[in-house]
Image (cartoon, rainbow, N blue to C red):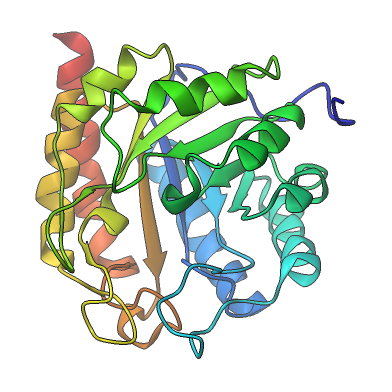
Length: 274
């Protein structure tokens, strides 16, 4: 049975401006969300790109039972909806169970399916039934061609507002690699493709009880993805990444963002002209 949402507040399309999904990994507190949204909004206006503000209300797939997960769905949706109202930004967060889909769909402008859950049929169908855009992350264990099955599960609900996100592939233990062929391959599935820079450079469980990361590779991989034809770009940003409560080794600091994004936009413009 279809859910209540019939008209999305945000439509996925080839925007006149490039599309960036950015924000802190997890909703640590309201002030962090506000500080990050204010900075990113100003940057988007300065550089000329469309910003979707992202943060997670629950990090349900952490390595350790003791890891910080976030405020939970009720408080998290309240916090991020305030960001939309104050800064006039579309908002996104991830869901982990079918039951969360309708509740989150009432508030968010876009739902995200975590990479680990990209084959969960009930979750994909419930997300699709909300009628709002879906950011479907390619699993670390899935080939780009095999994302066709996940796409069809969402499309079965009549929802074709799908963004496919490349975020690296498992390469042995505690390491990911990015095959840029994934971008044109997933384009062939008939949907826009996003590149997730900050999760692609993670070292899953690389620090024992939490994930490590090599953030020095964020910039070159972003440049490669722009040249490979990515329609959108995903980066998690934080004013003080090393002291963040989640993904501290892979988020990017505010001070490092502008020169990197400028070059991404330049490369993307060349690709679109070619």
